[in-house]
Image (tube, rainbow, N blue to C red):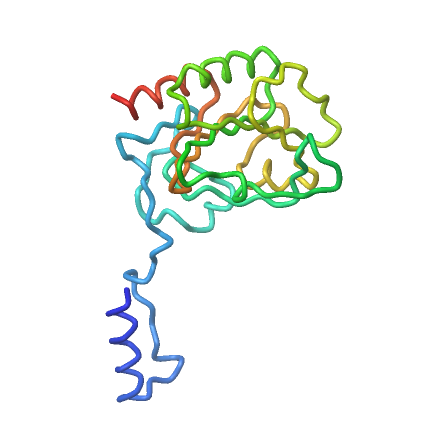
Amino acid sequence: MLNKTTELHNLNKVEKLADRDFKRGTEFNQLGVNYRGSSIIYEDETNEPAIKWPGYNKDSETAARAGDRAPEATKLSPADAQDESTSLFSIFSPSKHTVLCFSGSEDDRKSLFGFVKTLPKGIVQSAVVLKPNAPFPSDNVCDIVLVDDEGHAYNGYNVADDTFSVFVIRPDGVIGARIRSVQGVEEYFKRLFA
């Protein structure tokens, strides 16, 4: 990337390219890098093909597909703190997978986080994202409970209000799995640790 930008800089210096002459080629689409279709990515809720390129286009804002970079969501309130806002990027860990659960019943969450607790210690953290005014989960089986005060997480991850949706965010910030069942989470980790 540095070599390419240096080449363009030197070209501009010599030839004094006008803005209209400057064209960015596909080699600059670094954000287009994705892992869709990889054998360690799992998605059980879509009929869409796993198109590897381009990963970021007009549909990316509503896709949040497995293999894409995980979207940020701000203005989330930790359920255990008053008036303290956080974001998804601040809870993601560079050393752990984050199992991010949206909606679902207490039974769904108990089953999901019960499985997560069977994974080797220190490699996974769990979080549930609730809509504003949703009842606080009495099951208390996950590590982090967040309230999506302004809908940024639900919109960014394209989650319908009451749909049980689970995203596994890898330590590198990429969505490793997008699933709607505990069995899908089990399948993802089985592939990962096979």
